Amino acid sequence: VRLKPRFNFILFLIIYSGTLFPFQMYLIPLYKIFNQVGLYDTKIGMILVYSALCIPFSLFVYRGFYVTIPKEIEDAAMIDGCNSFQLYTKIFLPQSLAPTAVVALFQMTWIWNDLLFGMVLTRTGNARPVMVSLASMSGVGGGIIPYIMTGVIFTSLPTIILFILLRKYFISGMVLSMAGE
Image (cartoon, rainbow, N blue to C red):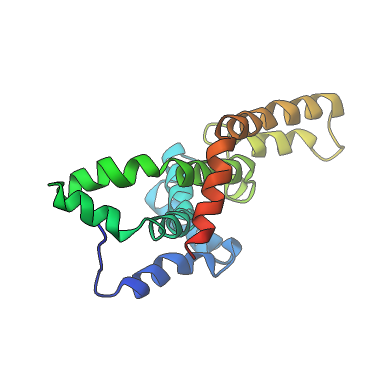
């Protein structure tokens, strides 16, 4: 299961290099590509953008976690007759709940609260994230404050509920993923 590609570190740097530059730097080329390909103002386009932007952080957390799993556990499972697929599904995957909770909470919160890509890559409410719609409620004159505050409360609930449900795994996942680096 522990794959050692020939250019392991270089591959990691290439994937993680997307976080070296601010998102605003590649927003205009992304906008042009989306217009040419027909992904502008579509849900599929937003899913593709957010998926691509989430990969580096997810890779960083999972890599930090998997290096903490002792090689002896893997060797013992191989001696017991596990192949690579069984090793992954019976050893690595069950232990991945904590880093998955960290990735899910961080990425869901980031995507849920994102304004930048939602404002630039969507035009109508069809594919627009909820926070962009909420921000557009304020308008030029400030909007109707009680309605805006109600929207803020309701849009905060999913993040709060997700954290409450995953807090045990989130805290242990944060500790484990940072211990590996």
